[in-house]
Image (cartoon, rainbow, N blue to C red; front, side):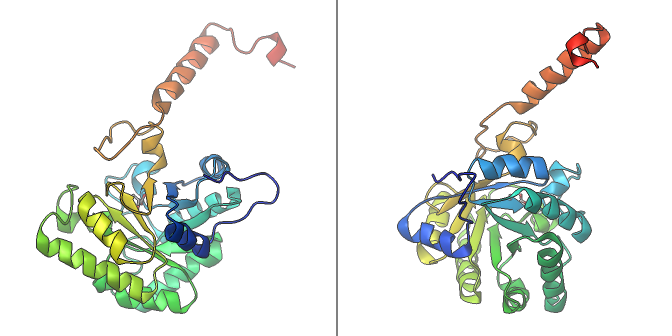
Length: 273
Ligand code: KIV
């Protein structure tokens, strides 16, 4: 892993991500939605930061990703971009801002790029949104695709279980991955599909394939940062590895603070003017 130095930082680009796939170096990706978290994740050496529309769940407490707006996504993205020195920053175009209307898709992508300073956008879907992807790419905006369990379509699926277990859906997913590659996407996220199928996709397309719940035989991995740090503890899917228990750490810190305030132990003389 290449962790950045405070001087001479080489920014990650789509070109570098492609080179990583070509030489078999795995790509690391995490979400972030605010300045403080993005600064930590970037300084730790992550390759891609996704300002995911999972902000709708994690930051705003909505049940799905559908309610988050363009203005809210741009607010999160702007805060993240201000903190990032090395990582490639990708922003989800929110639900309803690109499907079915390629002119609106282009407008949305340009707003995100112009107002937030991010480096690319992400959209969910395959053949259905090909025209929107082509239009966004025509403006020189890099596009990351997202196939498999696409949370913006949760009411169509009706469940968050593993997608593409049946042959028909698996074949469509492979066809969609090829469409995204041919359209010019620089990478594809595959969410919650069988590992065998994800491997097949990663071997079929030449662009990087980043998995979440898609096994280890893809070109990189992405997780929601609040999940892997153990801040959101109610969400424990099989694919999630929890690297810390920050909810417990934070709860104990807050409880200790309350105790000290109540006991008149905080602030002490050295903490006063
Ligand atoms: O919004 C998000 O966090 C995502 C990841 C789960 C890939 O799309």
